[in-house]
Image 1: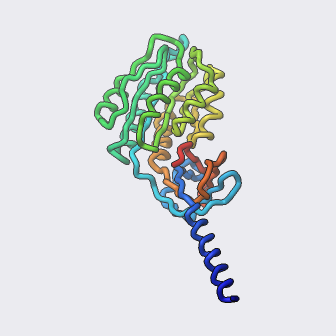
Image 2: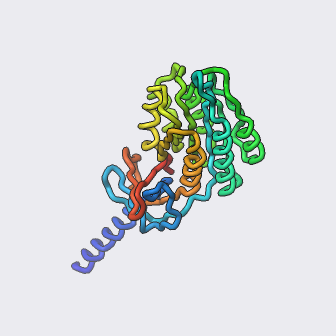
Length: 285
C-alpha cells in the first residue's frame, strides 16, 4: 500500500512538472546597450542581460546581435528658416548620406524611406533597399519655401506604413530644426500611433525647437520606444549624431527569455550588467 501511495505521489509530481514545463513560453525583445559615451556594446552574451516583467525576474535564454533587416523611416524638416538664416543643406546631405551607407553596409536588405515634413508630409522615397536611390535623394534635398513643418501629420502617415512591414526591427529617425509646427494632430495621438508600430523613435534636433508640441514628443517618446534624443546647437553636429543613431540601430540584440504562458505583461524592463544605458524597443514577439 505504501508503495502504491508513493508511486501515485511520484506520478502526480512528475505530471505537475510536465504541466509546468508546458506552461512556459519564450518571448523576445530588441535591446541596445550604450556605454557612457553613447557608443553601442557589441560583445554581450545572454549572461549580461536581465529581464523583468511587471517586476518579476525572467530567465534569459539567449542574446545575440539581431540579423533581421532594418526598416527605417527618415523624416526631415526642410522648412525655410527665419529671415537671416539658411538651412544647412550641406550638413544635412552629408549626415544623411553617412547614415544611409552605415545601415545598408550592416544589412543590404534593410529598407529606408525618406519623408519631407515641411509644409506637407511628402514621401520622396518609399521604403527601399536601393542604396544608390537613397543616396541620390538625400544629396538632392533642397530648402522648402514654406516656413513651417508638419511632423505630427508625418508621424501618423509613417506609422501606417511601418505597420505593414514584416521586419521586427523598425525605427523612425526625425531631423528637426526650430521651425513652427502646423499639424492639427495631437501629440498624444501621434505618440500612440508610433508606439503601436513597435518602432524605436530617434529625434535629432538642431537649435532650440520652436514648436512646444514637438518638444513634448522629443523628450518623452524616445525613452518609451527604445530610441534617444540627440541635440546640438550647430548643424555641424549632424553627421556625428546621425552616425551615433546608425551605430545604435545596427547594434540591436535579440534577447529571448522564458515566461509563464498567459496574458502579456504591462511592463517589460531590460537591464545589462555592462554598459551605461539600455534601450528597449516596443516590439515584443
